[in-house]
Image 1 (cartoon, each protein chain N blue to C red):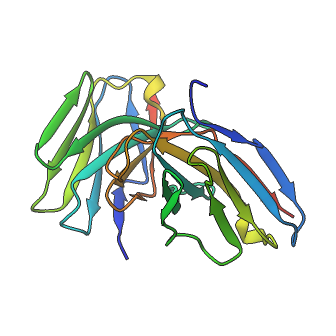
Image 2: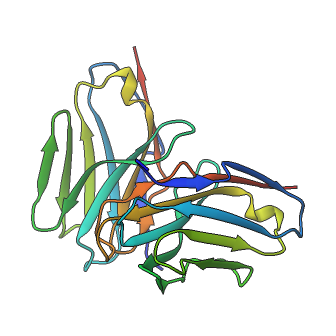
Length: 115
Length: 108
């Protein structure tokens, strides 16, 4: 594909439900990042992968949040027992090289609404 | 924790005027500073970035300046056009931390 693809585009969940958000990075991109963007705020870092290795998960807000990238390509962000404060846009980004100091290519995001 | 402060939060300019957005960072070891533009409902897109080995970088109407001593960097947009209206985010690329954003409105 031409860019980073995220699905679903919109997700409505009842409080307490589990959700899974998918990210397809640009083919060949080594690094993958997840961000959370609340309305009117800047993206907040959640976690970062280099290939299949999760190098930094310091931004995950609680143990209800879990991310994986088992084959070094597609990544899934899972949120268990969703809470209203989890409502936000979840952005995925990829970059060509490993490491942090690179241009990020963002997906369009998944807008999660927890009712 | 690591912090990026961005000012102003909103900026209105007349078409053709210049716009300047400033950011400060906290870690003196950081050396990569990108700027992203996000139009309403769209994904953030990189518009310009700077690494610490230079003090200024220009790309047509857009420029970024970096002052490592003071730990701040700025985005400069000249001859603003209505299509420049968007939210602009600075970031500390090493720390993966973004500023809170600046809503730029260009009035025609």
